[in-house]
Length: 195
Image 1 (cartoon, rainbow, N blue to C red):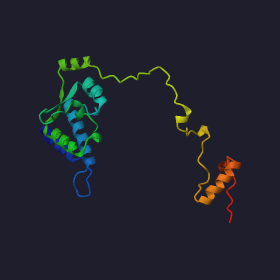
Image 2 (image 1 turned 180 degrees about the horizontal axis):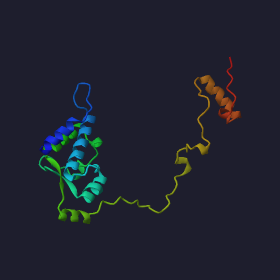
Image 3 (image 1 turned 135 degrees about the horizontal axis):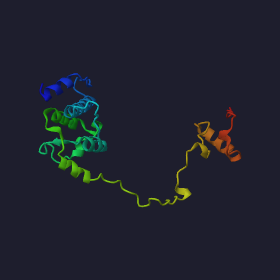
Image 4 (image 1 turned 30 degrees about the vertical axis):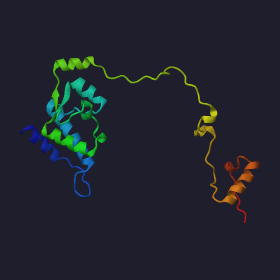
C-alpha cells in the first residue's frame, strides 16, 4: 500500500467533530492534524512509542534526539519558518489548519532525516537564551504605601462585610453606627430593623 493510502485509511478510522451544518469543525481539523503528523512520524521512524512534540520540545525531542526535521515547499509557504509548522494545533486559525492538513496529506509538508552535516550544524547553534532582567540579584524598591493596592490575604485582616447595605436609610444608619463602633460589620449580632 502506498504511504498516502495508508494515511487515508488511518484518517478514515478517526472520528472528528462536526459543526451543526455538518461541516468539519475546528476541533475536527485539530484532531486530524495531530493524527497526520503523528502517523507520518511513526511511518518514518518505525517507532510507535514516539510522540509528537510541539514548540520548543520539537527541537529537543525530534530534531536533536531523532535527527528529524520538517521539509516544506517554500513557494507555497512563503514567509513561514520551521517554527510555524511545529506550533500546537490549538494556536492555528481555521484556514491555516485546513491548508496545513491538506499540505501534510499531499506531501508538500513532510518529515525527513537530517544529514549529519545539518545535524552537526544544528548542535553548534544554541537555543536563544531568555532575556535577563536588569535588576537581577538586586532587591527592588517598594512603592510608597499610598500607591500600593490593598493586600487581600487571609492573614491581612481585610474581610468582606457581613451585611450588604442596599437603601440610603441603611447607609445613613451604618455611618452613624460606624462612628461609635468601626468594627460593627464583624459583630455576630444581626442588624435590627427599625420601623
